[in-house]
Amino acid sequence: MPGKVAQKVTWVLSLLEDLDFVPSSYFKKLVGTEGIWECRISFGSNIYRIFCFYADNSVVVLTHGIIKKSRKIPRAEIERAEAYRGDFLKRRA
Image (cartoon, rainbow, N blue to C red; front, side, top):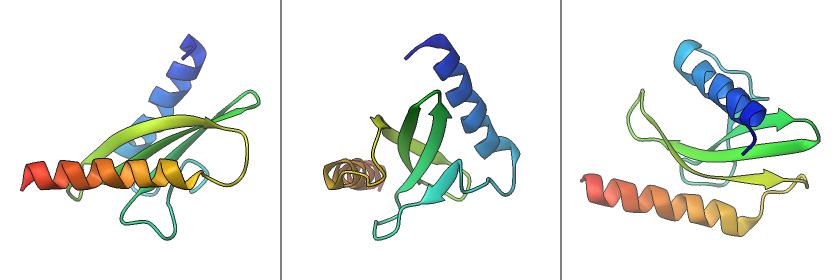
């Protein structure tokens, strides 16, 4: 990922640490999922989506990211994030 994009990703992820309430334009729960959230970063004409979940009340685990051009998130990407979450929680138990 280009340097300026990486800087913005880092900035948005720092919002998760610093703010009690992160605007939904940057961070929101995906409806119809088992605890999967998305972190959205807009840069130029691209929208970067990083999927994540809460491991504890204050720990956010990032699973993977995509560059998304359409409004709808591909179901395969949601299932991939849910599989990562399930694997993480199983190994952690």
